[in-house]
Structure formats: structure tokens, C-alpha cells
Length: 470
Image (cartoon, rainbow, N blue to C red; front, side):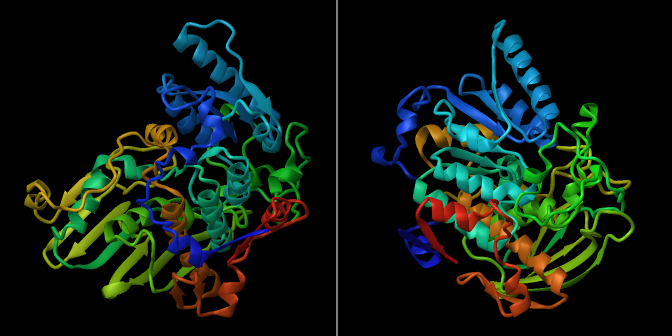
């Protein structure tokens, strides 16, 4: 039985910039139909809002590099809808008449299909780590929607399994593939605004709601598997997703309901805290402490946090303030000015937070000249990606690190989860990023991997004869 530990992982170079290029590290399946320079066959796990609005369109525009060949969902209505959409799209784009896509009700069956080279995981948050670990163990390259995981322990396990199996993993934190975010972080890391004193991070808050009444389980939904490692709970539509297929793009109930999602702190927080980490150069470390307050949703089924006000302390006494009152974006404040970065007027989904009465600039500064002067020849340069999906496909072809790899995703999500632990316990928490533990026993008890019946990361690892120390 092989053993993986956090210490050996970091010492071996779990570093975010390490590139795997040795020919003997290329998985055997890439010497076949999806060898470098040939098409990559993609399986999509989860056919809901994000998959249909982002991942599928992202692949449709890259048919020369990859094709969707398999789909999986626990809801047979969504599965049939997505199958028809993908087949019609490829028939139209490629001039075909009878393009077919395989469908699966369980991802374990999809993973046994040797024709699938890589997977896109677009399932609810509570399934991210378990699903991704099984995909990595099956040798499939992975696109994983953010947040990377729900608990810090399962995130560490996933990051180590990805490294052990030498699969490529890209986290769907696509802001790293937007020029303004890379520009802002390069300027900050090269001292354009002097020593960083403070960072202000803003995004929206969730709202009360959700019907509480118990409903019959739809015959098209494998609800017990949907619950996965979380405790048993009666079915009601607002716990899961809208059963009207015409509303497939609507925001699902689970996203603002524990234990399926932690709310905005890991929803939008996973995007913006990732940019904080990138700008501060703390992608492999993290903060030293977090304190703060929040209110909780309490008028309906949904129960995630509502208003929030968190303060992280990073090395060199950099304060990172995260609050729903700030504009939706990240403001780096230094001795010589500030730089603000956001998505501007762009919206990925209809539920993206907005600042009432104001259109934010994608890139702004206290003095426009801070953004105009070129960087010097020896400046720190960050990974260049202008298309997040293409960046992932190129990393698969070349066996290199994508812009948002597993270690980056784990560390950024850990910052968000640490904030959630602060809110849950109501305590100021000291954080040791080396051991990935707090100074509070109650908070540490919440670091563990949830499990119920067969839905268990420890059982999956035991079956694979792998022991991971966390």
C-alpha cells in the first residue's frame, strides 16, 4: 500500500508552476486516438446550468482539438436534453447527419469507457472531490468546476492523488484566463503600487427562500446518489434543481444550502480569493489568521450565510477584507496607490452579483499611469491564457500544468473554506498552511471528509490500495 503525505507532496514539488514534460509520464491512453495533436475525447459529468451554459459551449468552439463523446447525469431528463443538444450542435457545426454521444446514469460506468480521455466535472459542490478522485484514479484528465472541494482534508487528498496519477487538472476558476486579472496580478507582484497593505474583496450575498414541503422524488432522478456523502434528507425540488427542463439555466437551490454548498464564500469567493492568492504570490501557502461575522439565511429552506464580513491576515501583516458591501471585484491597496480588477460589465451567468447603479471597470487604478507603464525586462510574468478551456486542452496535449492546477485550486479554496469555518464557529482562527489545521478543535473537526454508506473517499482509497495522510 503506497502512502502519500502532505510533506512529501510539497517537498516533491507540488509547486504550481512545475511542468511535467517527460515522455514516460504521458498516460498510455494519450498514445491512442487522443494522442498529442489529435482530438481529445471528452466526457461531461453533470448536465445542469454550468455544463450547458459554459462547458459545452466552450468545447463547441474547439472542435479541432476536442469533441464531447459521452455525457453523464443522475437526472435522465437533463441527460436526454443534453444529448440532443450536443448531437445537434456537432451535426450543424461539422456538417454531419447522425453524430451520436454515449450517455451514462453513473459516472463509474463512464470511467470504464476506454474511449473517454478526459472529463469535465460539473456536479454540485458536495460531489466535487469524491468524483474527481475517482476520475484521477481511472487515469482521466480533469476539468473541475470550482470550488475545488468542500472540506480541506478532501481537497488535500485530491491534490495529492492528481499528482500521484500524473493527470492534468484544470479548476474552472476562469478569471485567470481573462487579461485584466493577469495584468492586475502582474502589476501588483512587480511592485507597481508599492508594498501591499490591504486587499478588499467584494461579491454578493445569498437571499432567503426555498420551499420546505416534502415532495415525491421524480422518477427521472437518482436522488439517493445525488445526496452522495451528505446525510439523508427528504426530497424537495428547491434542495436540488428545477425539474422544468426549460429552466435548466436557473440557479439551483443547493448552491445556497448546506451541506451541498457553503454559499457565496465558496461560490464567488473561490473566484476572487484565487485572484488574491495570485496577486499576493501565496498560491502555495495562504493566510495566517481569519476573523469575522456573518448572518444566516433563516426564512425558508436555504440555510447558507447571508451578509458576511471577514478579515484575513497574511504574512507581512497584509489585511484582506472580504465583505458583501464592497463592489464585486478585488482591490489591491499599496503604499503608492491601488489597482482594482473585476469582470466589468461581463456576466457569466444571470445570477452574477452586480453593483447597483454602477458599471464597474474591468481594470482601474488610483492613477491611470499605474496601468500604462510597461513592466521591466526581468519582471515576474504569469501564465498566459486567453481561453480557459483551450488552456486545459493544451496542457493535456503537452502534459504541462494549466493556469489553475490542482494545488492552486486547493489552496485558493482552502482560504474560502477557512472563512466558512470562522463563520460556523464564530471564532477567530489561526491557520497553519503547512499542516492545514487551525488552533481550534471545533474547527478542526469540520476539516474531515464527509461520508455516507458507499459514498466515501476513504473507502475509494482503500479499494485502490492507497493511503493518504492528512
